[in-house]
Length: 364
Image (cartoon, rainbow, N blue to C red):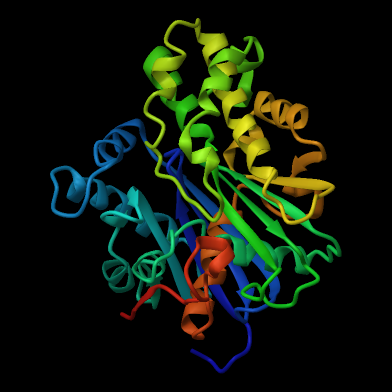
């Protein structure tokens, strides 16, 4: 790897909402962002989603895991091969199970295989070291959120909200120079986000998602369900804390008595209420929450957030960032940090006792 200057990293992310694979390039030295490069998206087919979904909650060696990994690897190889001028690849893989205080964390996909296929160094397995050191292993995008806030010139604390299958919040003080320094960050998973809505849509309509939040916008949230949801023990834990996609199994049964529109509206309200509850943990209040991930395309979700948060809420595009690619860009950035021996998580992002760098490096 050339010196300590900026290099082109290509990051890839496949979230638990199972939309597909995002890939994006970032020019970085592992500290600051010099430039953003091209990006691409490769959707999963319904058949591929079904194979991956069959692996949810399973661990290496269990039935269905190998098939899920094969789909993940093939899809990533296909989209990553479209890029040129790449110095290093950051490959997150597909989270199938996350149990940091139990069996650990499991992302399907072999980075060593991808390194051989692509002919490039691949950084992967970003979460395991953090978990082994006593951290939650998630969320991992906060260090990149910190770099983004400084890159766009923000000068006061703000929050980034990623709405994937699970929601996560990052409180950022861009006045602190290093992301691992005390006072720079606080990050944690908020609760379910897109996953329950997607699961509801698949079960009731056969569609992968509520595109644009149209169905939810036509419904009325059942606030009794929201109140019961907020009684879950997770909301009484102090951050940092993290979730698995399937940690709220009672949520879909809780809306079983509702029609489709009301059920979707209620699940959206639960996601927004979880974010509002999370915001109570911020070290300082923020004036703005910038939203990334697929959930920001759900107008009902954005309206629910605006109604429940005591600050402005808008997509990260308001500050010139790409909300569809922020997670992929994050793993490009983190890959360079791993290559340079820099930390990728810290006590107030994952609960790890001290700042630690994770990730394996596989070379062709």
